[in-house]
Length: 515
Image (cartoon, rainbow, N blue to C red):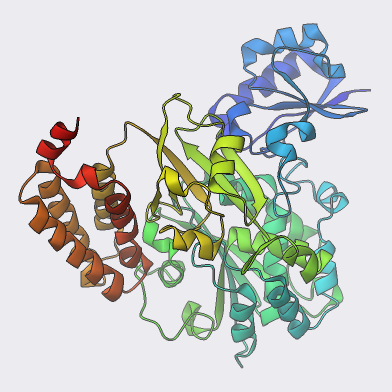
């Protein structure tokens, strides 16, 4: 009887040779192995991670290269034997064992496109429950769970759904925003590649809740593996009767379509994304009306992030309280945090809100990869604030992190070491906004250019005090007058860099004197 060997087909694992490892194991193992291509467990520092099923559980080896395969076989890894690359039982690895996996419970565990495997691990339970509930009851369950948008804004999901449900319109839309553009983020991609049925299930539940019959998953073109996997998953769900007309005799009709974005960061903003789906230039629309009232093709539309929708099946299957019991304050449930930058153990960590930033970067991340000291952490993507070491004990929650001058965003955490020039990082924020702005509003379009120019003067030591005043005025203008968060949040990294590292904005002469 063949031994099951799990080798990720996740894009991150493929980028470091997972396919070569799979080919080498297949060639050496022959009929003795059954290779299953799973998603990534999220321990990216161990990829390619190879797992072998044993009577005691799955045993992990990594990072494995094709050149390591012969020594693994010679050591008897098919029985879980010791090896220099061995880590014991996967679920007992400290990095993994200390997580609370709700949204990512199946990622890395199952074959992403095996619907029977998905159902055997709790999949479809939430949808089956929802198909026997009224739309009002579904919405109330999501409201009671405390689920908030995982894309950045943190708006209560249940309130969004309730607004769309209240609209008297025969045509409504359910949209998944998979335009994951924040630096250092990869959770959306991992979920779509490792557990695509979870996203689809969440969208079907949402569609029944608001009365939508058509859905769009808007995926950035830089994610070809996710696009391919999602398209295959949709076909499988259609063939099994979970998508289409009158789903399982419930009276719910829902058809799901993939739209591929061209990679514009601004299309992560919901109204710009909807414009792109309609075939228009991706530009932000003035609100009101909000999309839940008048969105795609001027019809009531819900736009939720992949992680938001991926959390819904757990809530419907286990109840609102089971989800709300995780977290703290108004930040309930779990958040998949993504560690990147100069960090020893990069990857995805799903933890209940309330975990400290220090725990994430030191206990999970293991400090810096370079061995240098950590200078700053940017949380919340390229427009998130820089957190200095004296604030590393901050609890990771929407409100608590905002008090520290940063934000949860999409859960991205990027580590910068002591060599980082924070004035140049502030300049990068303005340059990023300049490049990615949709151009519709003046504060964002022009303010970012003037901000970059002003920071160039400060860095060069040109009339520093006066130019810092100009920069502060620009930041005020962008925060208060920008049409969307693109311009409104750009000042956050600039101001937190200036506040936490003032000496680096004093000009080259002051820097030299300090040194």
